Each structure stands twice: as structure tokens, then as C-alpha cells.
Image 1: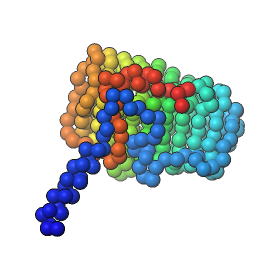
Image 2: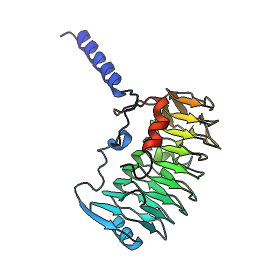
Image 3: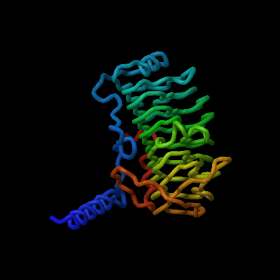
Image 4: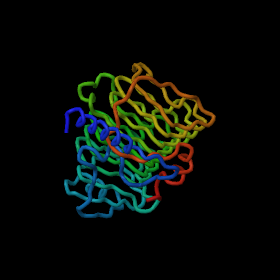
Length: 312
């Protein structure tokens, strides 16, 4: 085989691989893990370990901080008196649709391989879920409302995170990605997160607000009556906003926010109902994983039917 022929075959293979990366579908939503949480070795949480049922704050706190690979099943309402540290190799999952964490949130800090699913978070005094200096995290099918600060904030060099099928309502600062313009040394090359099939129900801002992460993938989310703005790309970030449904959202996405300078944002295949057209520009690094993209016009019904607790 000649060198020229070999190069041609390699180029064709690369194009074929790219073509297979996204598989559009009218209604192909899956509750399986996809996105950045599948990268860096994947996210399995407490799989393969023991299972414990908890019903009060003491039992929950002890299980969450234990170094044992474990699935923690939350029953009823647990009211925390402070942010609770979560150790590596944990799955924290609510039983039924009513399992609730109240008062304070979860601190996923300096760990890896954590899954948080099917929990109601309300009335937190800090962040609902805080992910910092951590990798391989999956936050899925939770319902969050009426908290003080961020609902799901990801920062300080965290990487390979998926945030999927959550419902957030009655809240201001929803999802921050990257906490400071001055944290480049820790954040540059990291903060790679996928946000998909989340329902932003009349929330205000940060859906997400991004610094440094590239590529950040925001796809197949439903924005219903967002009052300030949807997605913001700032400070070296690269955000792909793809296949989302924006309804009654005057400012669906833009570049720059507050004192943070504009960065890269590419928008494609989104659906707009009584909403603005958004601001985009620049280029974004390629998405490294396979994913199935729902038709944007079907996203509202798909997400409303599948997001939040009690659906898994």
C-alpha cells in the first residue's frame, strides 16, 4: 500500500468516526451515564461494594465519610447541620421519590468516583451539591429548590463530570462551573463537564456559567422561563450549546458575564419558543465521547417526563 493511499484511508476512517459520534433521534433519551462522566476511566460510584440504608443524619454522615466502597440508600428526610463530606467510591441514592437532603448540602471535595442520584435537595444554607478538586462524578435525577447559594457548583480543577436529568426550580444561582477568574493555574485544561436533560424551571442564572472548561457540553436541556440568562461562556471557556429547548427565555446564551471576559460558544440545532436567539462566536474543542442527541423540538416533553426524582 502506498503512503498516499494509507493517508487517504486514515482520513476516511477519521471522518467516519466523527460521523458516528452523534446519533440524532426523535426520542432516544436514555437514563444511562453518558458524557464527560464516562471519561477519565469512567464513573461507577459504589458499584461492587456494600449497601447501607440510612434514615438519620448521623448514619448518613458516617456512611458518606467512610472509606468503604459503598451504595448509600437514603430513606425519608435527612436534615444536615453542616455541609457533609463525601468520600471516594460512593453512590448516594434516594429511595422512592421523597428521599430528601435538607438544611445543608453535599461536599464532594478532593475525591473521585462519586454518584448522587434521586434525591430532593431543599433549603440548603451553602451549596446543594459542591464538587471541587474531584474527578469522575455523576449528578443525576435530583430535584433541587429554594437554596441559598449554588444548586450544583463545580470548581477548583474538577474534571470529567456529568450533570443529567436534574430539575431545578425556585432558585437563583443554579450551576457555576469555575469559581474565579484568578484560578487559571488549577482550572485550565480541566472543568470538562456535560450538562444534559436538565429542567431549569423558572430559575434565574448560571445554567451553567462557565470559566476555563473546554469543551463543556450543554445539550438536550429544557429552559422554561429562565429570567436572567441561560448559558454564559467566559474566560477561555469553550461551550457547545446543542439541541436544547428554550422557552420564554429572553437571553438563552451569551459570551462574557459580569467582569469575566467573553469566551467561545458554539450553538447548533437548538429550538426557541418566545425566546431570544443568543450570542455565539469562536470555536470549541471536539467532543471526545459518543452520545445520542434528541431532536430539540422533542426535548421539552422528554425532559419534563424524565427529569427529577422518582423516575429511576
